[in-house]
Length: 146
Image (tube, rainbow, N blue to C red; front, side, top):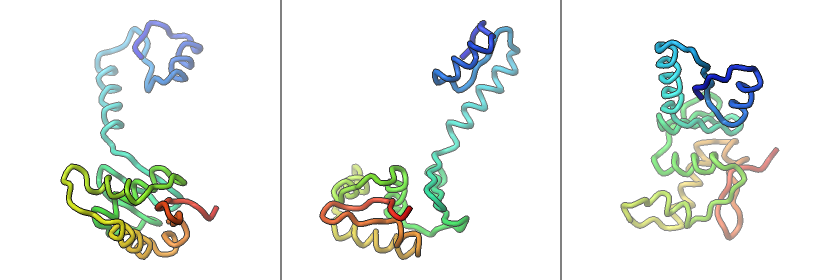
């Protein structure tokens, strides 16, 4: 927000209403430009998904478990980031197939999804066995053991 209102109430109200920053008049041009650049850096930093000891960076396409980089295929990464992005949400195999296939339209079977999940569980070790859950007859979710 860029405004002439500078009372503590106005600043708190503006930030509470969703403003990322609050600049009051008068202001220097260099300060304004620096704050705009800071907001742009934040917006371009990628999305970090954190679930327990798992950290996924969608910008750098990396996943770490206990600060160790996981060597994941494209499909494994996409499945894991989807599951971690919405813990406890059940993804059907069809949803996962559609997500992986994208606009290319190449065939992916439900069995291929099952194989990707098996590989993910193996690569994640105890974490995968504990948190990647099969929802019988539906699909998969990340969650469980609390």
